[in-house]
Image (cartoon, rainbow, N blue to C red; front, side, top):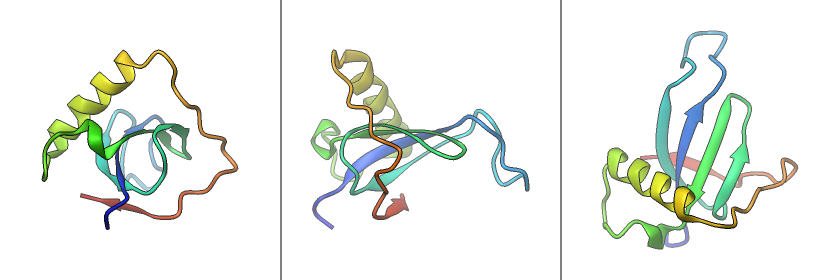
Length: 91
């Protein structure tokens, strides 16, 4: 799995079955390109793998680098909702 990017997912709407609640967040990796994606229960912030200079970063490290990446970007790519995620795997 060479071509992947990291993501941070912030939950905006609680799951009806209580699986997660508003305000929760998670990290993982995906083959989606960098940018911001609106998702069913929240927002996914995808950052390039090269933005995280660690081989096996912790969840906290990925979250910090995502915040740094999007706060310093002057142009942020907004992903079209009709584009699909090929696969997503959490760390």
